Amino acid sequence: MTGVRTEDSTIAQSGLSVTVAPFGAEVRRTIALLAPIGFRSMQLSAAQPGIRPRDLDRGARRDLRAFLARRGTSCSGVDLWIPAAHFLDPARADAAVQAVCDAIGLAADLATDDRARALSTVLPGDPPDARVAIQREAARCGVTIVDFSTTGSPVSAAGTGGAADAMASGAASGASRASVVEWTRIGIDPAALLAQGRDPIDAVIASTGRIGAARLVSPAPSGGRGPVVGGRGDGRFNLTMYRAALTVSGPEVPVIVDARGWTGDLVEGARATAHAWCRAGADPTAEVDSPSG
Image 1 (cartoon, rainbow, N blue to C red):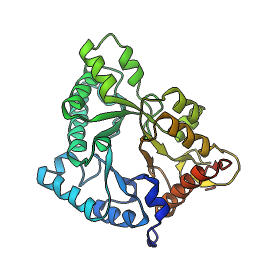
Image 2: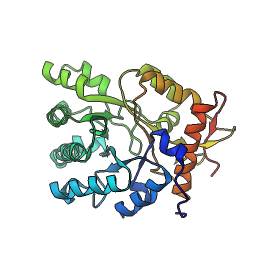
Image 3: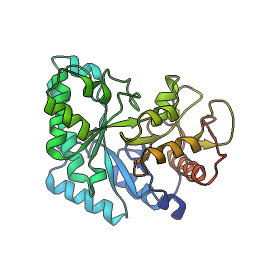
Image 4: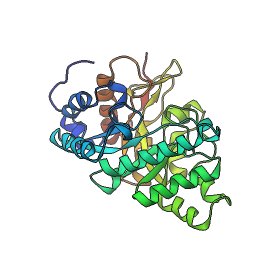
């Protein structure tokens, strides 16, 4: 990772968050590295050592919130990606559900406002009891589940089901379905959608009013994931339209620069992605490519 230059006021004013886990194991060092760039919030991972719920008691969680505040930033939410197969495996299902419930509690404790009381994950489609248990814990803690199963997990393969399926499912009780409506929102991941041959803009429009968070990431030519960069070329998607669609869907939708799966200089990639987002808001003709390498 390269050295950090003076804070970029454009990034600071953008409201963008950034995933912390990909930048290295030392969470506080990463936060200290990214905050001066201008990122005013950080998306933490409940699977990262030092951030895992079992690693942080109440006092440690208060201390982490205070550390973030001293750096001029805050927690935008928590990620936890568990493969769908774990919920179907009798030997691992209980632990998988408990891990998600523990992450919900972590998200509640690290948040400094209601919008940050959010866990990005993939809700299991089956078994229904696992999904309902997670939704009930979210309702109890006042945490929104941002479910990426409808568009594909940012890292893992998508699970079955999802927010829309859960709402329609007869397996859950009426109270549980109401909980889904109140505490579950849809996650948008453009790289995952494009990899599936789907249009992120169409997904945003179809999910208007129900989006809990959107990722800012591009498919790489190699088939992986990478930063969003400017210009025209193969693999292009229209970031301006993506940003406009998100604004129409809800101006308060959190947008997260998602560096997981990237290669190369992650700091410069995050900076370039943030700048591309800001340009897309100012230039109605701007389009972006997948990274060139």
